[in-house]
Length: 116
Image: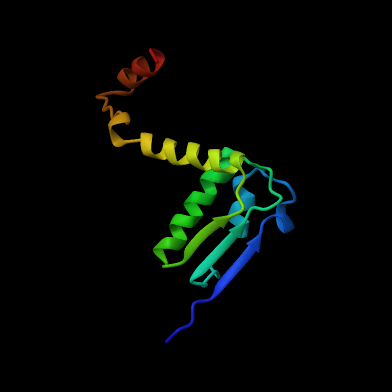
């Protein structure tokens, strides 16, 4: 029987108090993460930007596909709210909001774009 390995990451050791960019989150996660459970400790983190929260959700989704569970602990109300905003934004986007348009000529396309 394989024992479940857990890696705990105290985010304040890496980011101090604020996590503000997608790239910082992307660097945190890499393909070498093979642990079956990752625990993200948000203690001492006071701010998480929307873009960083969105990237974190994307990274968590990638890891779930590899059967790696990611949990967050010690999240303050500001961080919880930001995760809620990101989750609600992704739920509201649907394919019905995307408009596909075909043009018979470049001039037709230009006229269309000029009227936007």
